[in-house]
Length: 118
Image 1 (tube, rainbow, N blue to C red):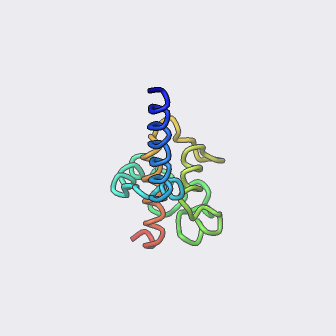
Image 2 (cartoon, rainbow, N blue to C red; image 1 turned 90 degrees about the vertical axis):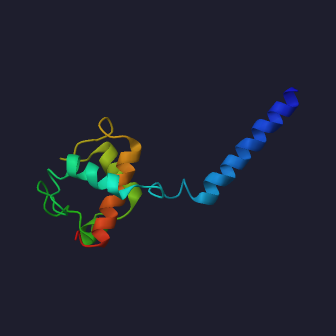
Image 3 (tube, one colour; image 1 turned 135 degrees about the horizontal axis):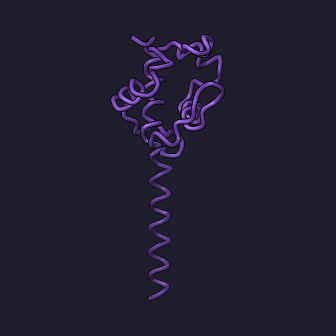
């Protein structure tokens, strides 16, 4: 009985690992991101300093595609880290937002930057 249970757990673990890697869930945290939710979160928490793509505190660190690329922030992982941990004048949102909300904000920012914030 113990061997069967161990085998079952091992089989399910391998199947889950294959599913995670096959779907790319570890490679792209914004895969299932909800940009509509990201827009709501952005308006509530980010727009104070980032009116659309601008940065009211540090002008060169705006959210345009060019600035994101120049500052190595043009990927979801970098944006998620910045929003989660904060940096310089930007506060950490770790205690205020769920991880999923932060992922949604990252997806929203990248989507808007790609569309020139129109």
